[in-house]
Length: 345
Image (tube, rainbow, N blue to C red; front, side, top):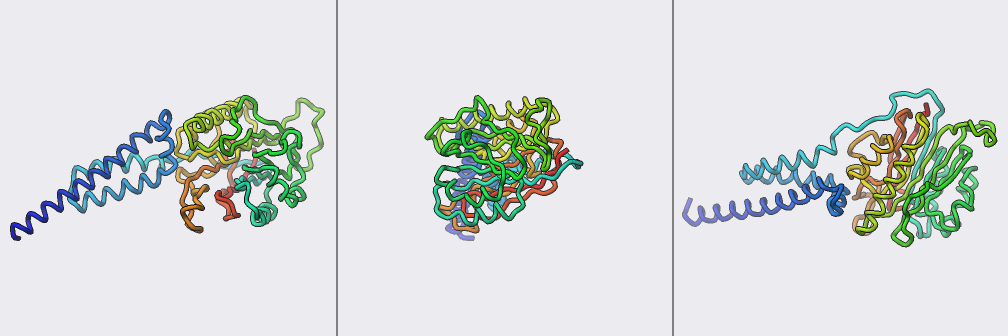
């Protein structure tokens, strides 16, 4: 090797090491912010893209090894472990078996304001859904949902929903009580978001027991949609919303079967989602720590390349069996719907 070749090789190694170091420092800073996501706004935003951060960490491990930057490779491995651990930890699971009635629930953010809802209506009315929760439902959207009204015999009363309900529910099971959860902050005009619904449902064919104050519902369903955390104020509002609903669920009578569905605007890996599970006592019906993305970009990425984050969720009380859970098809929204087959205790 000539002196020139040696000098070029040394320069290339220095450049390679510097570039790798810069990337690892950036990943380390993002990781540190994510680890403080419970108090740091931008750290929580990073949790929306935790698999990307994990992938970049793995890439830096390979780059550092190929470049023979062994110390940087060790640091990259540590970052990969920190960012990969939440993706692979086994989640708490629902009941292994139950002996009650079967219930199929679904949730769908309808992408309010678009013109064509035919795919959404077709999927909603042909999927044997018992309870369907929706988000971004305006009065304009409702005018397109005549087929849903014909298919689902029970809905919350019109005076509760108002002209622009935002959060909507449709049910083949009789709704014996519908109300908004109290003391939940919803800031008008701060992006999509609406008052959470609480529904008490009776079993199909069960006699009307509204006059019996001691009767208990077969299941209680919450439908949520906190605002998207695009600003610090919205982030704080979303977190307060989730905290209030979690406390309301925790206050339900012990043993009551509870299902909570909706667009949480919160990814699985956010500390605020994990806090919601802990406070409410519910478990994620997805049954995995790395669920499929449900909210995806339709501005920057073409279908069917769904780049996004799992922010739509179906949660159940631990005494409910999850027989099947799946992400539904593209029905014209920027969210994919979720559907779960449950068995009540």
